Amino acid sequence: MASVYDRVVVPELLDHASPEVARDNLRDLVRINRFFGGHSILQRIMADFVRPQDRFSMLDVGAASGDMGAALQRRYPRATVTSLDRKCVHLEKAAHPGRREVDLLLHHAACGRLQAHVQRADVQIGLAIAADAPDLARQVGAEIDVGGAIIDRVVNVCLEESLDYSGAEPSFPDGLDVEVMRFGALEAAWREATRPSDREHVTQFINRQRNRFRVRGVANDVDLSHLRWTVDEPADFELVTRIYEALFPVNPTFTTRDILDLLARQPELARLNKGIVRNEGLARSLAADPPEPG
Image (cartoon, rainbow, N blue to C red):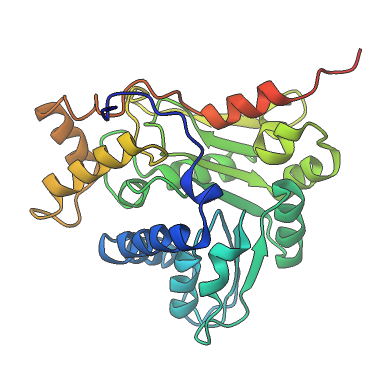
């Protein structure tokens, strides 16, 4: 029998699961967001930018069940929330009577769909956050020893330096992925990108052309690239489960600093998902690209 230390190469469950299996897993993700602070921390972040009575547009990419967008819609009833996911069946439950003006869209061609609906919403800056990183919600609201919250740092760099793209570099743990881009760069990717990998992993088109776009990575002050805090594999889920079992009963609002302290006390936890290749899906997409002409 394989242990959690073994590398398991399988597609992500939600990409290919039957509706019944997907429904159970999406229900678990909703519970995690509801009871472990995902909804409340997102609302706290939004409170720094908008008031409950404001009108604004929000695009939720990789929305899964759409519960995060629904939580925002309840908090901001005059907002227009667009939830985007690769499989529209995941979003069916999001279309309930309490949620107004919500678009539920099939994320089939990521680049084109994303551009079209950002354009309709008149958005100038886009923020991309990994949907499979449960510890990111704690990271973005935490006062940590690596220079402040990731989202604030990446957004501020993009705005203050008038960049087309900024993103968290791999010196952050795998899973704490934040990217910020201007609409003009996203529109260029939508119009010009032809590689299948660029159409799937939208920001690659922008990030690769640094002679054309103003691009900068945001590095962590401490190299934590050896840590993996995402949930793609069973070993990832085992690690996250152990972290919550150790920290949540004592402090439900534990931070990244608490996780790092736990891993220092119990280094065997970080070995649970050690050896899984970072950005493996991107590597597969790049390998599948047809040869460049000429």
